[in-house]
Length: 92
Ligand SMILES: [Zn+2]
Ligand SMILES: [Zn+2]
Ligand SMILES: [Zn+2]
Image (cartoon, rainbow, N blue to C red; front, side, top):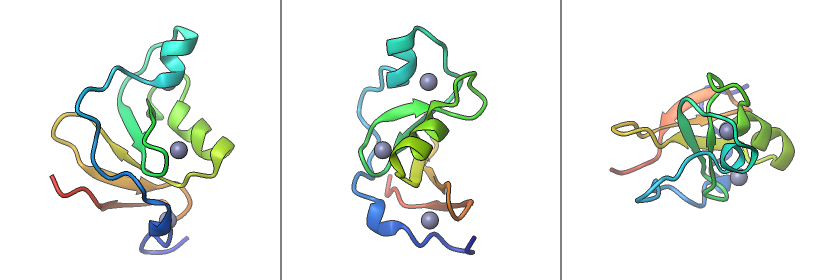
């Protein structure tokens, strides 16, 4: 674990999508999400750890995409699952 994220080469998508339909896995499985996060590597939106299915964490484990950000209104913080550090990439 580091004080700073060392995985910025995995950050390919920084801006939140204009319209977020919901967690892609919850929409497919018919489950509910609480808060939404976007993977910085592939840009897909999944649900936070307060959600029953915790799809963002499952996506990190399955894909090894380590960095995500909040796409909740007014939130622009990012989080690295490996370094366990919060930081800001987005410019909005
Ligand atoms: Zn990192
Ligand atoms: Zn979900
Ligand atoms: Zn991803």
